Length: 203
Figure (cartoon, rainbow, N blue to C red):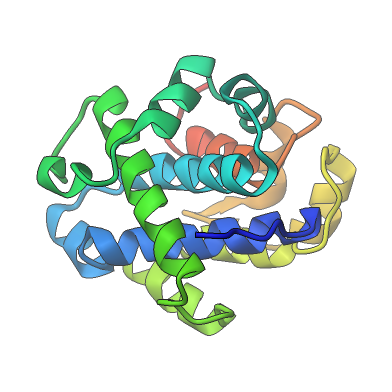
């Protein structure tokens, strides 16, 4: 399968497509809602970015880890995941992060392959993304991604506030959440992960 590299500004778009396709392979948003387990979302997002960076830019596990703000071992687990075996190992109630990230890596590989072989829409409309995210209880993630579209990274606090001011997540003003983050933010995946960390009450 020949894969043509995309331009760097297209990484976020392709990663989002892989992310949504992974959810579809996993059983769709309804399946995650039924299990009331949204802890898969950060794992799937990280895996989606990792696979895109590896396949489109031939980046190493170490380089991917630095870019996404994850450990080298996590990046390695994603890249080594066996997409042929992953569907046999899916357990939506899995609490161990290392197992989730391995399965997420396999799902992202499958999703990437599906997209590259044309079994996916060439573009994802924002309304479809919003519908899926809302059903997962994570519509804020789509709002954030759509608001920062085209933004250069790494990003500082002032730039993010200018794009995201006025929005609330779970009753918290996004400006207040941004005040608690460490800067610069290296990429969209790190931004989503850090916002999620604050929402969970982690410091």
